[in-house]
Image 1: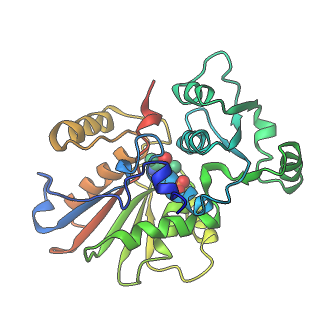
Image 2: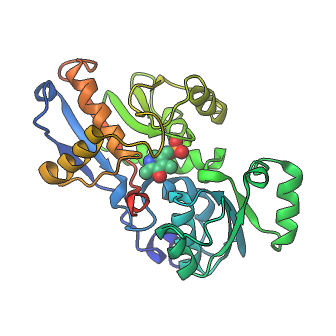
Length: 297
Ligand SMILES: *Cc1c(COP(=O)(O)O)cnc(C)c1O
């Protein structure tokens, strides 16, 4: 029998579901669980694997070349690069900005894995959704499979919904960080409408994030919303309070988080609990989407 992709990549699947009992005001009356997608793999972390997984279901028919897009710290490019290296797939990444003279840890890993890195200026990068540009790329890289920035396509939703199916306990709320919206859309399109799906925006974008999420969902949308109070000014903006909080998560609860995604998710969780936003006695799932590599300097 051919090996499954999960075996080839040595992934921990299903990811663990851990009970979480924080010493936070208001948490006593709730059942809190963490879906530890950060533990799926040390490199192919969390939701970036979920979003890519549906493209790699069959180890017998893998693409020969993949092209994708991202910034210099992208968790998506990091996961994709490792995956291509391990599965022997040619990979070209189109990176926004020229990092050739100051390579980030993420890009140094890609180089190590023999990924073809192409630095482009903002104007070129802005063509990443342009049909003509994509056709041209496909021809240039022998009929490559082109994956959008962040791995966020409608195909990504199937992979994300698998994580919902893995959850073996009953729950009322599920929380996840939101950037491109595909993770939230995948969850919202696969849970029943009695459950509340809560996205924590990690970047500024009232309404804009909502439309990204709903545009990705073809069918019923369930009961979801995006909370815009916790992005702290944007992606890489980190204040002292958030930094201290990340430290507390590690030291007190042994849960590694970073200030771009998971730190904001748990910080939001703590504040929402304190504000009494979850009914007494209800059960919550917090999705740890991984992404620790992005916090390296
Ligand atoms: C990309 C990423 C997200 C955001 O997921 P979207 O599907 O783009 O909304 C959340 N957490 C981590 C760790 C990520 O790398």
